[in-house]
Image (cartoon, rainbow, N blue to C red; front, side, top):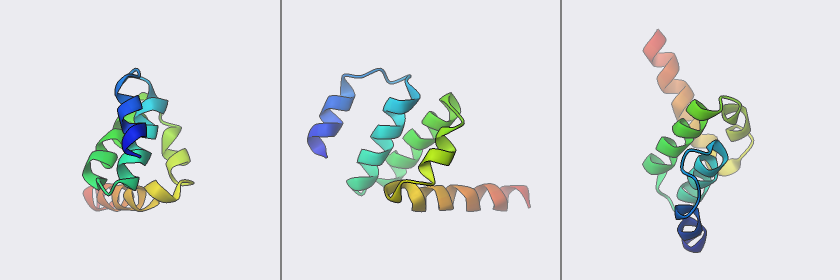
Length: 75
């Protein structure tokens, strides 16, 4: 995962897929806050990434926390 993160550094940071994969890697490394930031960025760049994140076990908990925060905000 550390090697994969190093590879990600050389890729386009404005590509939603790159941001998404970085979120997965960071989640695997236990860096949930950073993973959540990159997940948010990937969703902002391409909203369909939100659906994809629900399917990845590494991001599932982050997505659930995100949804809870959104729900609490709007209530």
